[in-house]
Length: 211
Image (spheres, rainbow, N blue to C red):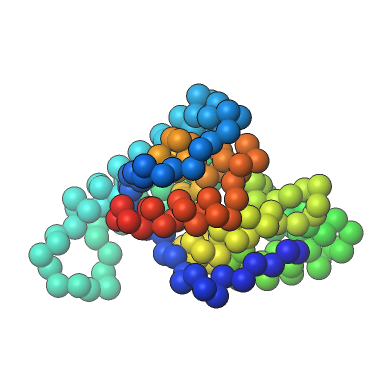
């Protein structure tokens, strides 16, 4: 698999806050990508974002911000978190570990599962944990099925947004529309064949400025 060095770029943490990215120097999108904003996928992505933001807001409203920090969770935290995670899983096509292993290593048997785990641990692949065990579900968009690998730009991006530490937050980043991409999400840009490493850097940089 193609590797990318990101030693000159500090890790980026993704949070759940909505950010509006404004720049007079936004990259010019091709006509193919501009058409994506009119598709149902862009609308559904925005609905996901709004739903997650609503759950977070409900959680904040239940907490007392004047209390000193403790390890205890506010009332309703687990329920809101579970609903948000389920909503993400419902709106992304996913496969289990065994199926994911076959996508990158069709003939290696259990070796494919080990490779998937290594990619997940390295932060190159989003694995959505489910249950206490946990089991993992892998969003299909990450895979280049024809080349039997994780898409290089996906691996690059996932490491920057620290997918191994916050897989659900990273999945949210992929499906959240941004002004820098002319109102579509990074996933839309990826599916349109327009997402590059430099464009990923720009989206992350401007989102940080908006925080």
